Amino acid sequence: MSAIDSDIPLVAEIGRHLVNSGGKRIRPALCLLAAHAGEKFDPDKSLPLAAALEMIHTASLVHDDVIDAADTRRGHVTANVKWGNQIAILSGDYIFARAFRLIADENYDRYVSKRLAELVGNLSVGEIIQDQNLFDAGIDWDGYYDRIQKKTADFLEICCELGGVIGGLPKTDTDSLAAYGHAVGMAFQITDDLLDVWQTSAALGKPAGNDLKQGIATLPTLRALEVSPRRDELAAIITDRQMTDEMLQTALSIIRSSDAQEFTQAKANDYLTKAKASLPKNLPADLRESFVAVADFIGCRRF
Amino acid sequence: MSAIDSDIPLVAEIGRHLVNSGGKRIRPALCLLAAHAGEKFDPDKSLPLAAALEMIHTASLVHDDVIDAADTRRGHVTANVKWGNQIAILSGDYIFARAFRLIADENYDRYVSKRLAELVGNLSVGEIIQDQNLFDAGIDWDGYYDRIQKKTADFLEICCELGGVIGGLPKTDTDSLAAYGHAVGMAFQITDDLLDVWQTSAALGKPAGNDLKQGIATLPTLRALEVSPRRDELAAIITDRQMTDEMLQTALSIIRSSDAQEFTQAKANDYLTKAKASLPKNLPADLRESFVAVADFIGCRRF
Figure 1 (cartoon, helix red, strand yellow):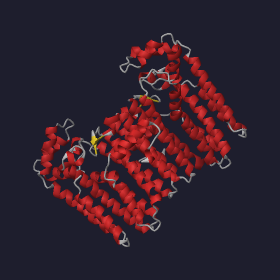
Figure 2 (spheres, helix red, strand yellow; figure 1 turned 45 degrees about the vertical axis):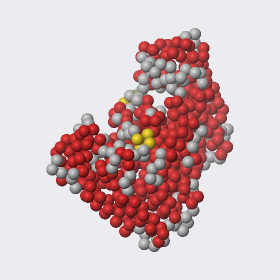
Figure 3 (cartoon, chains in turn purple, cyan; figure 1 turned 90 degrees about the vertical axis):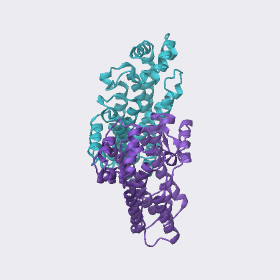
């Protein structure tokens, strides 16, 4: 919390709002778990990295919410609605900067800063790619997987890998943890995309059908575009930049009545199986159980 | 240039547009001059830092232009107009990230990354403060100086200081160069604010009277609010969020007919005198001349 504190009252208030807005904190959790697996585990040394990872995530969400003109996030009003786009853009920059400052203050291996800078670059590029492909009903599986990799899988991979690095794990183990994080990240994003179609707004803490409304075709939509008898109707809605709420509900019902749920869930499960199989062989039993529990949580989460 | 290159065509195109859009490049120039003053000067080692400083500047301008809804910058169309706000926000994030990546790739002293992260944080906070004080006709000299310090003087200070650090200068000299950079930065921003009132749009490469139009009261305006017989009329225009072009022209003519130009120029000159006096005593003559020339350029620049 003190990491994003400020002597400018408004900046401090924004920091508190964002920290108190919750979230699943899966990134710092994975980082700490991975650090814990190493012989050199030191909580004082691990917490700043875990906090910086969550701050980078928060900063990118703040910018995404400006870009998507989103009203709610994690059940709270977004920074762009509460303080306006200007302040939200600047707050995002400020939080990015504080995260890098936190990292610079620790004597981490240089590899840590390199990977974090690479991460922020990839997050931006992932969003740029997404923005270029809005309102497109072409079935581009590779494009989808590339996008969720840059948006989420690379991030969770880095959390696990860097946690392992500062915990002092050997490279074979940090590579295995990275593979675990990557697969868990793919499953996490696929589940997110699934929930956007099947869950209620109240449970999500943000509007359901949000991706479709913004013209983003995710895995359930791609599947329905491939197999639904009403795929032409679905394609027409997706490519319409003036999509009404009624059209959105029609699109959701077309996707829901196809086999997209089973298909998408199966893809997520494949990644979770792969994740568990990637875990280093020599992990202590209690830590292995925790990593498995994270994967299982992702497989059955409803928010 | 390669530092902001990308395998995503749009990202590469944005990078080229921004790099080719010119600018005075005063930040990398100061950094390289300062590095040159040290015994350990190595061009290969200095260029990445100089480039990262210009990239941080560019990224913050890209975000500022979104925030200000600016159409032109350095005589070119802005990224927000050319590609939309979404892409501009993400491009700014991407360029910030690439700058930090460039720094992480070099074996600079840790102090370099700390100061750069601090810099980005301060730039954001400076803009947040500015945003909070829009359309305010109160005469807040301290607020003005604090803002331009965070926006420009701290930046030029860091360019000089860090150049000296990587050049291997002793702390007394990097402190002196930092003081020079700070004073030059104050003068630079004051001159910028002066040109916004007195120069034509064509010479500036951006609209004249831009600050006033956005509700930002700079030094010439503060002076006119203090001494002009038409100060009440000026205050009424400044606090009007629906300022028309006609009102803007009236405000400019009120400021121009006061003694604000002499007053502002004198302030800038004070800082430039201070800057020259701050230069390390033992600088080689040719370098001293270059630092003095930079200060003199700032004193007489017209764009």
